[in-house]
Length: 337
Image 1 (cartoon, one colour):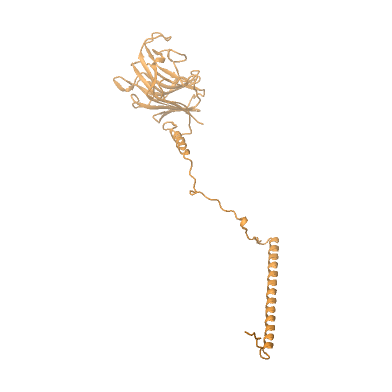
Image 2: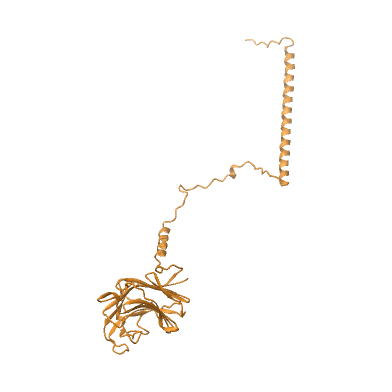
């Protein structure tokens, strides 16, 4: 097929199209110029604004910190938490805390008397024999010794001291043996802390079973005693926490001003044939006595300050009944820290 040339446009048509093309190119150029001018103006304004803010910051006004866009290399992921965010204490700590609380709650305190106390001596007599690290038998000697008072009719024999069942026993029996006194008729027990424990000022307390007289259960039999004594008598003093005398119980204080003793109190009531607590609070210038936690009286004159040791004894009186046993459940001393 023969190729033919494209028809020529009518006269004047090409000219109109050329004029129209020139107008389009001019408009495009104008719009482009306006756009570039606007971008230039915006850029100038932005630079001016940043310059103004920087100047304001230097002048002490509110500064604006311009942050750069964060990069993926600046990102730090948060730590991964475990499923249980609240940690639990180790199980081994709990029994320890309970044990410490239990030990604190079991520390004995004086009966009925509050205060800031520290336990400095304690024997619960929970063994099967006397604790010789704390106690010695006899009076100022070893083995069988003479009594404290030469008018007594007994010897102090270690065989009459026993421990078992949670108590200390001092047993008075009828037995003649040699101990340096004339015509001894009885043997009994005495223990003391002389040379092993002594103290100046403090709270003395003992829990004691006082034997009752046969045929008269309301009367205390023989001469049971809980007391503290100084090394040199009477200069160093003597505190008779409780003495069974004439069937009753009494408290005394002996010192250089009155060696025969000041009777503090002999409370009424039945103290024989049962467990009771007997105590004395020895403070500078005063000794106060407590029976079963009740204040029975005080002495305020002639109070000594020399160290004293503890004594537990079961001696004979004018009317002797044997065999009988005085028992002690505990002996304690507290002092102020």
